[in-house]
Image (cartoon, rainbow, N blue to C red; front, side):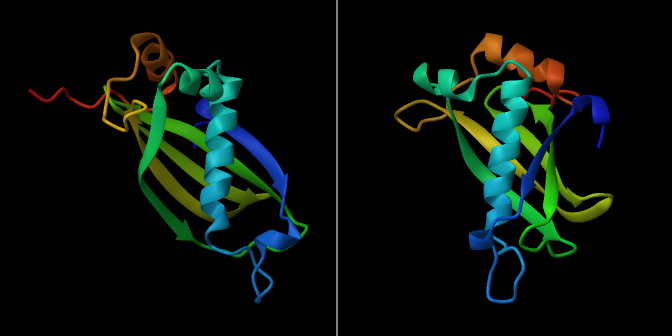
Length: 144
């Protein structure tokens, strides 16, 4: 991942995040992605809570993960998050979960901007401009 546009969020694996096999249960990676995403936004001046108070909600429309190696209770892992692309209504984040140099999991979330009525809406221009400046990929072509 591009280090300049990547935000790292360290965390220790908690006991309740593990399963009977002693490894992190697969569903917890999605929670870690959310933590990484909100910390990425906070670190770059996009206050998720303030956006929601204004009625700008980012709903997960798609999530995907690829598991490569297990994480275990007590280990220090890092969630590396980056904003990959920004459209008028949607944003794509990509993630890597690492233990030191070992890549444990990679994934993405596609978020759609919706209002309180849960109907799609454009990302407000001020928020979108900040996101575009942080995105690591060019904008998607406009559809007509």
